[in-house]
Image 1 (cartoon, rainbow, N blue to C red):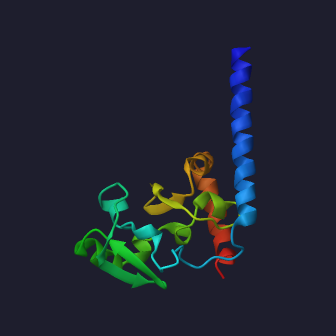
Image 2 (tube, rainbow, N blue to C red):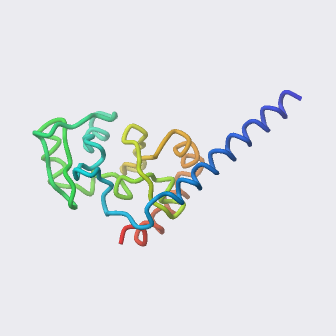
Length: 156
């Protein structure tokens, strides 16, 4: 009896999470910018894209170490990180323009939290929240594949 209640509870939580994500999809923009940026033009909410790779953690950048790329301002924690990014931005920039990887894999764009991230095969991915991340992680290769299929039509 306890086991079936736990299973029902898990199914209910998943159903609520899916319904929430579906509602968010309706509220999300139909077409996105190539880079998810704030109204002030700041990409990935000011986090240092290089630090995810070199330090293995989310690190806030500083305005004095700034680089412009793809119509957005990118902040870095150091001049060295800024210079690495400037030499090879595609290597460090998050996939899907820094939008939620779960959302893109479901054919819509939604904001992402730079503190909810994962590097997979040398590529940086963000998710909107922990719930979206858990769903995305259930089939990372499949979700990445779907995201890559969807992304070209989502950022026109």
